[in-house]
Image (cartoon, rainbow, N blue to C red; front, top):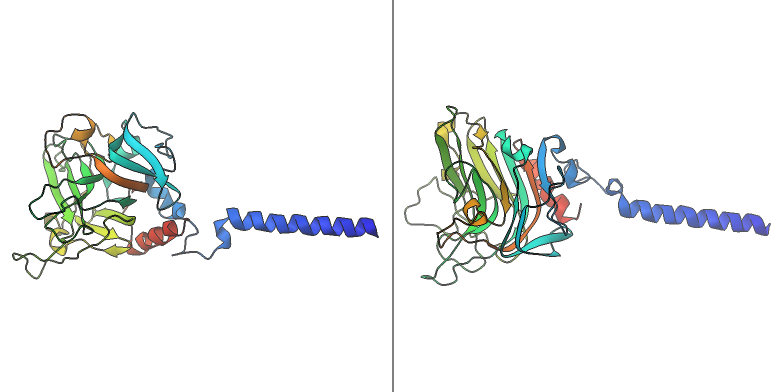
Length: 302
């Protein structure tokens, strides 16, 4: 009888411990968000590069480490650990998934940046989040996602900007433009212009830039909400335009190509003072629901 009681007690303890471990390690025990159990499930087949930035700079799809590291430390981030830059960057050799980007593109990340222009006539510089080099415009490269200052609203007001330069279908000329949010209403704005103060300065925010190849439409989302100015979203008269990289293409997190390669001469073009976390690059156009799911899942640590 004592043996049976001991066996049953041990069995109950084993089942209890198993249940605790299962709940702690398996997100499937939690209700799905947007139909997904974790952020890794969102557009998984179209994810071409992913930097968790959880204590190292390794790109997880290819296990590629940075070829150059400048003033980077590791801190608590939006999800686990994150990269913190003090006028620093992580630079990578060419990655096949990035160099071969063509068609629609989406870039998702968390960033913690601040308005660098604190007084009306003061100097300001950009806060580069990620850039892809290529072509002859090495200040921006093929693409740079950045925080910027457009007019002074307050120290926590940030303009998010995605600037791009890529190949026209003839393979020689450049197609370029930008996608931005205005931080305040300007006197020259007409009914096509939208604006918002976008007060994310100094706090972690989820940022997504998308390029729709079918309509040459570009948009920016912050914390699951579209913030880009409608006047800059439609390009090429709404006709199809695939995103097509100039090569060679390298990646820098926290700097533009010219800063990372040491050729920059512009005062506005500084390396990042801020944080980046959970950087993902997709070869597809993320939908509004997928963007919202990424935001909610990563915010929940999933």
